Amino acid sequence: MLDRKSTKKPLDHLRKHLTLTFNSESDLKDEAYMQVLKQLKDHPEPDNEKRGWNFFSVLASCYAPSEGLYYSILNFLLFEIKHNQDPIIVKRCNYIFLRLVKTYETPERYYRSDNELYHIEVL
Image (cartoon, rainbow, N blue to C red; front, side, top):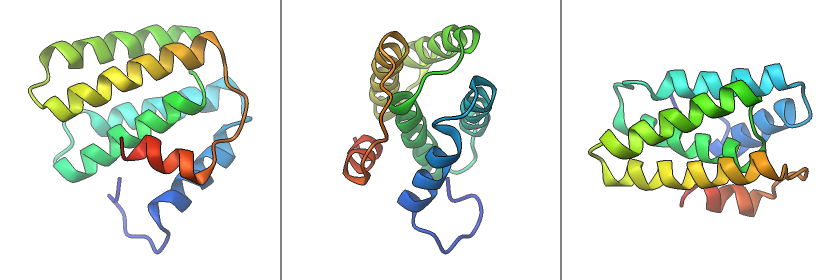
């Protein structure tokens, strides 16, 4: 979310994160989701918040959280869809909701290409 300085490109950070979490236990995947949600809640920098939503989209397109967290995240997204005033964030929430449901119901077990990650992120 660019909260810290780095010489890496955003896509390189994304790839590193997915490498660490993609084949890990559900606890680590849940932690990834929780960290993103924590960053999204009342983030002071709108541009960085947008990057957080983009990252959330990537997670939802790559792997699902555990069952308990899954339903909590869906409720969070529904709340944002109904109450957020920013149409771009509402659009992103709808996308994340649909991707999360699909990933949860039919887990996609392949690594996303850089091209796919780029297009998910810039939706």
